[in-house]
Image (tube, rainbow, N blue to C red):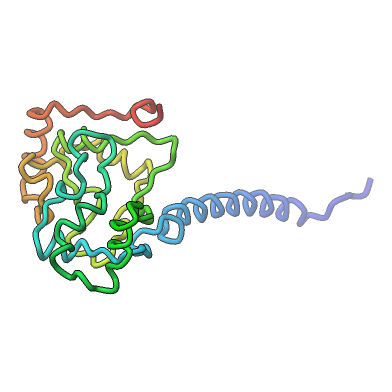
Length: 216
């Protein structure tokens, strides 16, 4: 009985199977890399705002404490956005005719909140509590990056689950003394792991990685 398939069929079949597996792996890698890229996460991309608020000027140059504007960061899950009255505490006295601050003055006159564009946003199915992180010695810049150097605010980290788990699994790499939580110039010391291990015990930090910690 004559041979139905050519001898090269076996080679072609193997190449097809291996090629399909390689393409599948490559496609998975591309999707994974794309999901963490700035194109998707908007990391390091400054957002347009109704008022070009500069953290570099207010927090960096003027040294205004984070809690002056984000008043609920120590007591609530949400850090809080300042009401226009907070802005006008200063700007009723200085830069009173600046064109770029007209939306602030209009908000104050009309008693209507400014619609800021969210920069650091988590999905609705993720629970995050600012107050517990602050209470455990996690600094603002750990998540928000060099905020005091941002003329316009951008997201410094992806805030994706893998990024959060990196801290939850090894908090000793990131925890700092509580008195420096709101410092925008704090730098981790050379003995961070030693200091961190000590603070983890002192602050009773647990490595919470169960799904229900964030997905409630």
